[in-house]
Length: 186
Length: 99
Image (cartoon, rainbow over all chains, first blue to last red; front, side, top):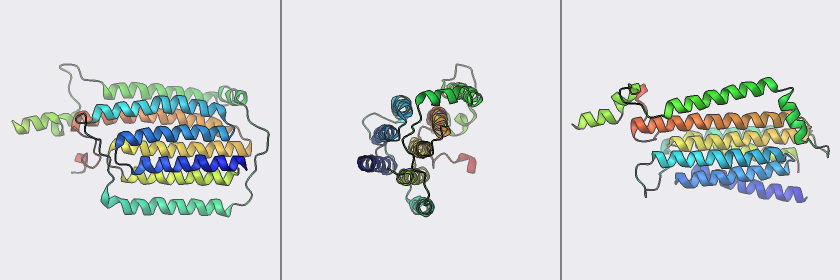
């Protein structure tokens, strides 16, 4: 009973935060509400007896991803003091609402129709078991994931670094970017 | 607490994220909505792991988290490159390849 009440509270916060992330007009507020959402998800992981996942959720997402997002917003806004507009596209709202609404109805129908859910019990999975599984049975996936993270790091550095003098700019810069506008205004 | 209740929460979050991904105009807003979707998938994975006593759900959730972080890093690098090239991050204005 207590579990059900706490799940209801957590679910309420999650859905409210997700709705504000998706529908809000200020981008900075959206990122901060995403942090709330990710923290509340960590609480839900604790309720689901996965404390290790709750820990890395807080460290990885709330510590890393949200900070990165805030940095990206600060780097890409035109001038300070102006609220970052994050409006939704007017003509796309109705089809998008229909699509996601029908997906929601379909999945709810599927969950509603299932009667024999496993009820869990008290035999919990420990973090030790999780670590053993990752580093023995899933060792190959773990190594592949390491290679992927390395590739993502190198890719991000190559994409976002400033070009040196004399080095050619990426192709689009000349045709559509600031340089083209500068030449057009000249 | 039942598995079904957690699944409803996950499904609702996923559909909200899908709506945001389809309607957002700013690229960073789209990335935020994708985060919401990935998060809901994690919730469902952990819930199944808890209620079926299968460790693989949690292992998979760990892998999904790392993949999401890699995706955010590359995505934000692309956003900064887009801003440097076009001086905005509006997804509808970045349509030169269509013409």
